[in-house]
Length: 206
Image (cartoon, rainbow, N blue to C red; front, top):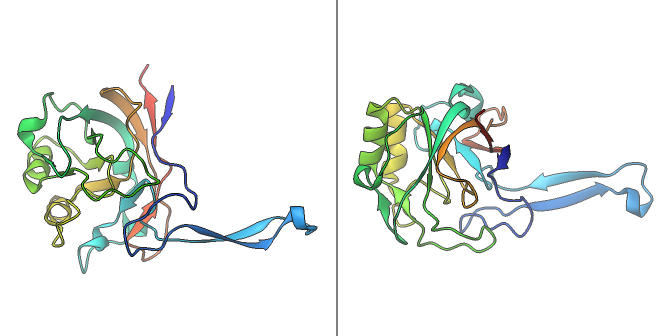
């Protein structure tokens, strides 16, 4: 079974305040009598379900095209955590053993991708340390950021950079049960860019 764990990408999708929302520009349209339909997409690369590159927070760090694809493909664990709005996920809140090198956290604090709520939950730098000690190579979350909205210095992003832990943000995990899956969430090879949208899916294990 395949779980599609990214939000639909349309003009209704809300992006980070001040960022560029998705807009489609039509260059040609079969409905208007043209020979083909062709369009241009204008938007941020931090769109919907997306992978941040190390260069998002590191001056000399790798851009998204320089990232290995290995973190974005393979065994994955979905972990549901009881955390409130503006809460932070700490190691103490993880009530299950870590069994995969990719861990996605379901917080339930960003329920509607068409409405931006800035009181979503996030991850702590200490959690990144704890996961790294357990061999985790990628961490994901069902909110717009692994840091709190108010965390302008992005400490959790920087801790992920320190440990070379890849990140996924903007996932939709409300219909996915806690447990083990195969993750496929490959970023585009956008040369020099700081992030890429992904088509994130989880496949149930046989």
